[in-house]
Image (cartoon, rainbow, N blue to C red; front, side):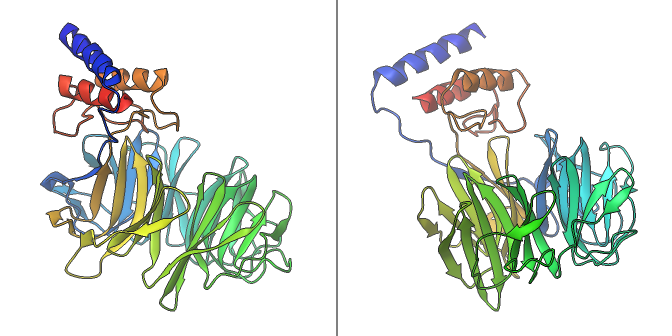
Length: 392
């Protein structure tokens, strides 16, 4: 430990004495070993406490049987109990438990070794998205009723079961998000609550529905993501996709249109990443750039989901290789950063404290990793030197 501290201090001093000696740390894809090989697509990634949950059509991860749902504990993938046969459309944490939308039900798992339970009543069609707003769980999708809910396509969970959300929405809801204190619903809707101007995107303030500006979208929204004071909306239909943003006052013009569905949106180390078939679209500021082919598979190649977790960007979809290296259905992009606790402030005392806590085995869920230089050996002198070079 003494040697590590001396190395640390030396690296720290050298970095700042040698002005301009270090450049921004380069990112790279981390190869997956056989224990991380999914046998079919990964379509959702969601945090649950200090875990990362993956859902999809897979049945195995490496040699481990996993019934379409599993979690990453920072070192290995672990299976979760089977929630039943069907497609899992959404997953999120609510009041400490994991909630999923599977077929026409919402199911709840209190702990990894627990048992799934159906939440209240079953819907009469698919539940496609979940969201927490004003302390309540909301479900939306293609359904028109469940139990006492007779207002279509959206419902709110109460202590006595699912309840109406105003007078409902008149079309299929694909995505929910919380922005500027409102619940935003996007999809194939022409009106929400009977309010004119609520086509495609509408907002609920806890009492009434209203319009979100006057969007002129090429097709229905499929994904929404809140990023740095803006609501990003992505959609795809008739061989056309788009990404557009709402800043709370106006819709900014289409920032990208191509022939591949955009799916999976996440910000990582200051860069916004958007998945698009075999490529990634990235933006640091207002300019979007599209990469060359990154992912490949013998069949269709698609990025479905992304998550910023423990200092890495996890990318899930249907692909078998990343830049030619085997990485079935899941890839990890890693870029060392001095913002170790991932709070947006770089090189603070909190970053240093979080780094040394991680070295001692107490890594936070959103922090970087003890193997800071990603050489396969965690907590070494080289990791400490690399961290302090990043601080410089």
